[in-house]
Length: 169
Image (cartoon, rainbow, N blue to C red; front, side, top):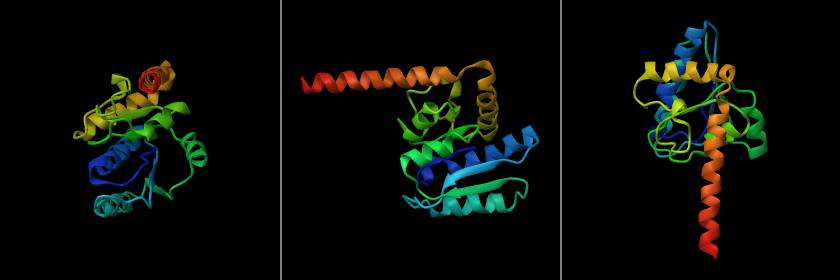
């Protein structure tokens, strides 16, 4: 499970980590929870410390920390994920989710990420709801629902391009 991006309190990574562990328990399989390790912003240090402690006390599941990487490498890493999470209090566009969609990975996001399909959005504060949405996203490839996010992202990109073209006329 991917939960990449800078580590900040409003990115809500701790509850996402707990939900990922719940998801692994539901699947009855160990999970690897992937995050960035070296982009800590806005007093995000305690967030990372708490996530490390969570996985230290969950021997079945593993925290995988990555150094910040170039875009090509990052996309290659994303292709190895089953689901990407960005259930953030503060994101609006979220390039990490757009990258995941671009390589065909299902996403679970907060309503703040306006371009994503509503069927992949979940509130930020209820871990059971987030876990249920993870299960849905994980199974979405069986129902061919990934195209919903791609279509919404393409529409958002077209609208942005139209705005910029009009601006420069």
